[in-house]
Amino acid sequence: LAKTTQPISMDSYEGQEVNITCSHNNIATNDYITWYQQFPSQGPRFIIQGYKTKVTNEVASLFIPADRKSSTLSLPRVSLSDTAVYYCLVGEVGGFKTIFGAGTRLFVKA
Amino acid sequence: DAGVTQSPTHLIKTRGQQVTLRCSPKSGHDTVSWYQQALGQGPQFIFQYYEEEERQRGNFPDRFSGHQFPNYSSELNVNALLLGDSALYLCASSTFRDTQYFGPGTRLTVL
Image (cartoon, rainbow over all chains, first blue to last red; front, side):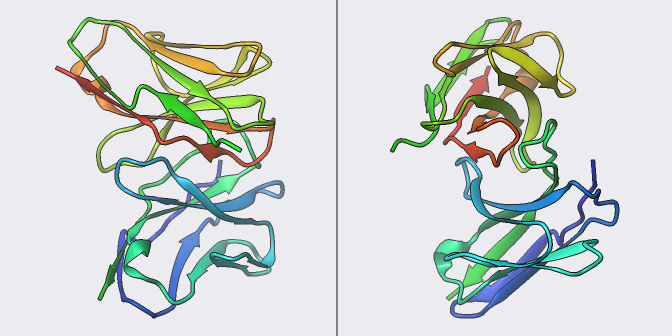
């Protein structure tokens, strides 16, 4: 299973775009990249998932370069309610032994 | 359409006791996974159930056991509770080999 590396924490202000990068040098051919958001004492919430290039939904965008050794979650115009921990996961979709890292703690300030 | 539900929300037990946590998967999902999340850490995979069988297991002792029922709901049982078992227990459901969706969790406190 590919190990992921993310920044421990990030600060931003309301209305700014936030980009969180995840490194996964050992990503395998069948692996997808999935991002979750988690608020304190709540279950992780699925944000976005992708395999290559760019994926966009109503919440975020996911950019994946051609070598797939990293990925960037982009949150447009964050608000205070986006303050949370963001996890990057790499593995087969629905695969066994899904491994969460420590995540990135995003603080959005007014 | 209800998402993943878990019960109870909170639970307090004493060392040595046994506990049972319950999970109902999202409609249409047949696979349930359980995770333990200690304070300040990411969730740790316990095991996954599909077709009423444990398909894969993380690095957890045999004190942790589970069950999946024909309606795809699941239970997590923990025997001989230790202080270190205090955590948020998360259930995630999916169709087999598809994206997992998490429930709100059960906060277990062991005194």
